[in-house]
Length: 200
Image (cartoon, rainbow, N blue to C red; front, side, top):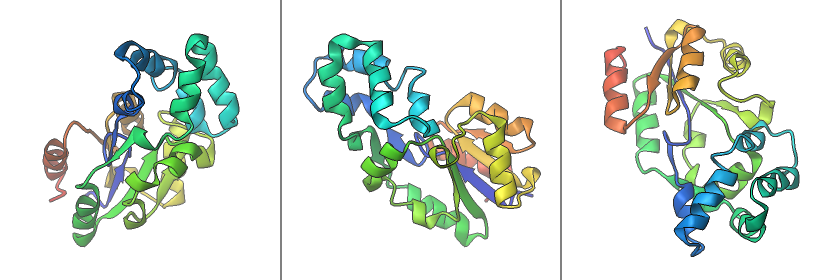
């Protein structure tokens, strides 16, 4: 029986709108694509979420990926608030689950910068019962250690948990530890999958 619903945040409880963010500066489509390739689509983006390197060190890694757009990289990342978009359904969904007696937690790859810059899109966090941001523990999904940390911190039985994430490798890692997984594609699809696990 499921007792705990664990949420990823980006593209589950918020929209990850990096294209719109870069485009909002008036850059042409080619530059928007290059900015994405140098940042959010690069392996170095994970360094943000790990929380080990400084923001300037990470920015320099992005610049190394495409030195010709250093000006645009610095300008667009000075305030990354537009990268996350608030989802109106987040709080009602959480409160609906809590009203039915389910514990609600989060497990998300997240940087300190995003926590600071995107606070407007994160108003649901106080409604959750707890969770782990990767930057606070220097671990990121799909490292099994971050799942184990969540299970231990909240004294969870994996078989009584379901994890909702938009990235399949993160679901696979959770399932390897005995946690039920739902690959998020839409609110309606996720709710139907929850119902299939007896979470009405």
